[in-house]
Length: 289
Image (tube, rainbow, N blue to C red; front, side, top):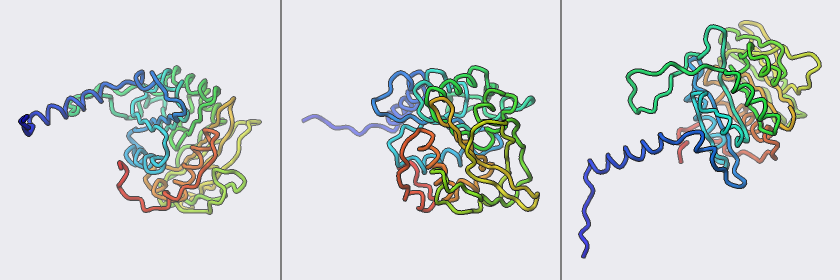
């Protein structure tokens, strides 16, 4: 009879570390190498200093985890390669740049589990990434440009993709009302006015003669403002949705905003929008199954 031995703690640890190391070696090229028939691939880029990447990723996992979509998350733009975007059905971005903050205070990438010294953060947004986003939207990829992604004003072609002439920077953080929701568009149809708590209010001056559909307005009374806070448009064979709430965690814990995210993602990929009863459940921490 074969003797069965219990593996030692050291053996378990070595096996675990080998698994982690193997997972760390997965590259964008490996993801892009093969796409199964019928696979829906959604790629998220977030994770800068001022905007809560943990809240963003957990929200997206909670909202879209019930689908059979393949959800991929990146915090460094160097991993958003042309090969990856070519096989992406929906690209979701919450990143920005200014003349003086070309890395938006993000973390330099390291494959180590414990980091003592980090590399310099990657430049964002490069001309190559800008061109790849535009080209893939035109060929049919959906784009969700969220909150701070409006603040890429010196990337003129990306602003043109959104239909924006000039982004409007934030107000003070203040109680914010989402209202004037477009009842004639599937992204916001049936959703009533709601509060998102304290948030910064962003907006934009849209380009003359550009075709877009307003989705919602944002209103604050402490620094009085009532301005466009979300819209969508079609570009080539693709669809673009821009939603500006989301500086704080407030919007992401609101059922109506999670419903808007759900609707927007399906619309951006030109899919039918199924019911979403899971969004009405409490915002708990059971996101990994």
